[in-house]
Length: 186
Image (tube, rainbow, N blue to C red; front, side, top):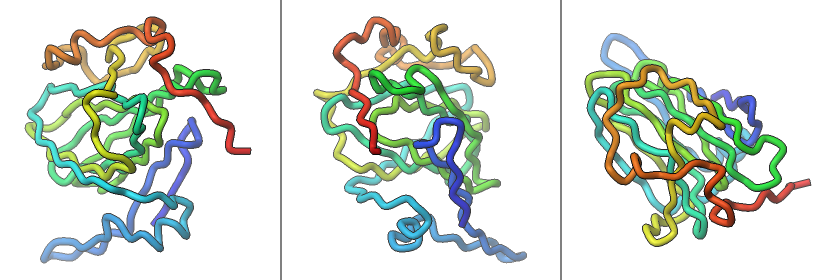
């Protein structure tokens, strides 16, 4: 397995070992000891599975209390997955990174706590799986506009289907104290 920091180094791109032949493939989508040895030593408490159709955009979501780190992957289909650093006083505050995750490339993305997360579906449908470091708590959930020009995400397309809730998310500059605080690990 290969784990590589992205342009925002806390966000990790994971390329697991995939063993395939004419019958199909096998891969370990999570192996605590191997991932820890490779630098991703986190505890997960919840697994989620969503299915979305082409053109659906979900996000940008985060929890202010009980912040969730997420290890995300796609079982079927393809998505463009995005993480936005929303930690106040972070040197990369307001910057984003993105990667295509698909059943073909089997890549995973680790989005740490303190980041807003979202994705758009590129294929006809996509099954999106993610492991979370804390429990979902709707009372602490917040969202940032997917098209916030101050962030400037280069989404592949513009004509998305978005939930009413996500369409009413606020701009990053309007979030004030509803943002996590950056804590330098050094």
